[in-house]
Length: 207
Image 1: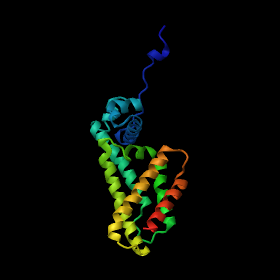
Image 2 (image 1 turned 60 degrees about the horizontal axis):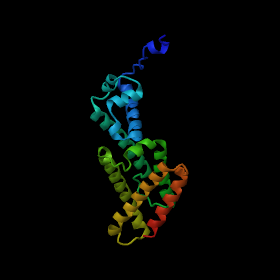
Image 3 (image 1 turned 135 degrees about the vertical axis):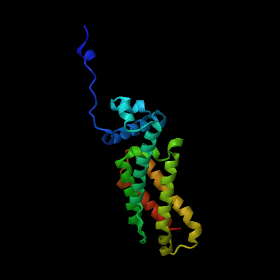
Image 4 (image 1 turned 90 degrees about the vertical axis):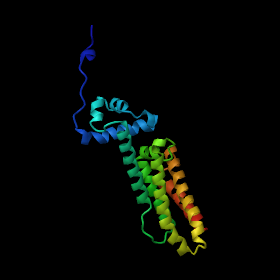
């Protein structure tokens, strides 16, 4: 006897239209990329993940290349916005609280959307290496913009020579904090931000 489930027609996914479906397609691609790597992101894999047919995905993106480009651009934009929020362009003298607040703001963005950081943050895959490089350069420029007048106000000597090394230290510590938060459930953005932000302030203050 044939079971009812064997003859029941497959339910079609709700028709949302490409504009409303694209975020779902990108979310599925992000999940696949984080779990299995960029190479695993294909139109067929995304369709299977969403339980839709491939033409539904093709209606959103012409091919795999367009899909990946859209995914990377979306997640890169999120990272840039998070870095910008953590490093506002105001040039006021920074005290320890400013550094702690900045690290906490950065780590809050990581906690809110960890998969975006897992995809792009230091990922060795060539498909995302350029995106990580751009976000890192943005962070270096923002840190330099904030740090130069602060060092001047602190009376630090030989600023032009020291600034690149101190900025690299600041950004590298931020990257380490991101990796720590992603790898461990023993830290919150508030606690880890206080630890790393305070450490960076004290190191820069003694330059």
